[in-house]
Amino acid sequence: MIQSMTGFGRAEQIDEDKKLVVEMKSVNHRYADFTIKMPRRFNRFEAAIRGILQEYISRGKVDVFITYQNYRQSDVSVKYNRDIAEEYIRYFREMKQEFPEDLADTSAASDRMLTPGQLGRFPEVFSLEESPQENDVALFEALDAVLREACKSFVKARSTEGENLVQDLLEKVDTMEKLVDRVEELSPRIQEAYRQKLSEKVKEFLERGDVDENRIAAEVTIFADKICVDEEMVRLKSHIKQTRSILKNGGAVGRQLDFIIQEMNREANTTLSKAGAVEITDIGIELKTLIEKIREQVQNLE
Image (cartoon, rainbow, N blue to C red):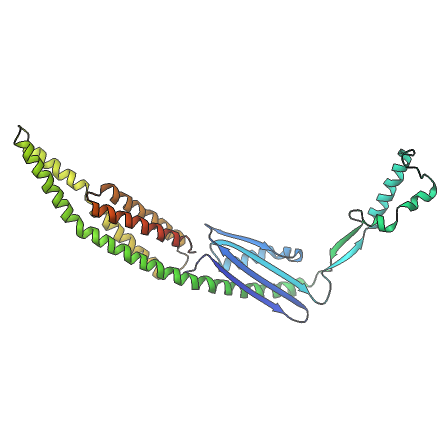
């Protein structure tokens, strides 16, 4: 089974105690790159979460969003930090002693100038804390179930998209093979026409001077061979056959196909550089355009 690297998955568990939701989305990436956003109480499960994700995903930049709501207790509570409050008061007293002229009220009653409401506005006098942790085993069991369900939904979406990509790639590969067949059909005629044209020119040249006819004929043959693209077409057909086989076998094929596409492009470039006729040049350009389209699609495969 071949998967696309783009997809979305979602799962949730809702009961009288809690609501747990996992959502996942992904885009293309050379490797498996997981970004997990979750409540702090789940941080201790991060290694296990990544392990589960790796069971289902081998490539792609995946964003995972975990949201959690506990119906039985508040997620946070307010904590009064008495030591910090006392430290603020102590420093204010020191300030009044150091700057008696600037702080006009230096009486004993001045300590009461700082009201509880004012003191409570200073940082860390009041802080928010998570409620006591729930049972780790029970909480992780719930997370494990929802995460795996989301992963299965995610994989299904990627597989559906992957099937569509495979069909599109196979159609493009079929078109490429037809272009290669066309080059193989044209090539002998073009080479022969080229030889004929050169031979006629050489004969005209020989009639005007003393030139080694055998040497000229050999050079004509060598130059005609240089425009021959038979080897390039044989290799392209081999790459096409290999691509079909990989797509048929399935699995994580993105990297393997990416390498083959590079080889296809190399053969197309060589064909263009050796093209001895406009017809071959036109087909070479079509091949390169098609290979680029295939490369873009392969980038989407896991």
